[in-house]
Image (cartoon, rainbow, N blue to C red; front, side):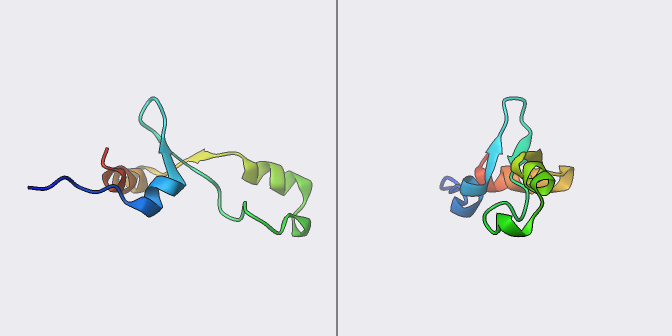
Length: 64
């Protein structure tokens, strides 16, 4: 059976932490910051952990 390929879209969007958690960026943190308050922009800047059921699927896409 051939090796599973890593999903190229997932590898650009997610990282696995040292303890095995899936880290993702918050939505709406790319552009149009003039429409947001500074507190919103700061909150969106922090990366967060993906939810449990999602992280299992993401790890499968990443081949982990």
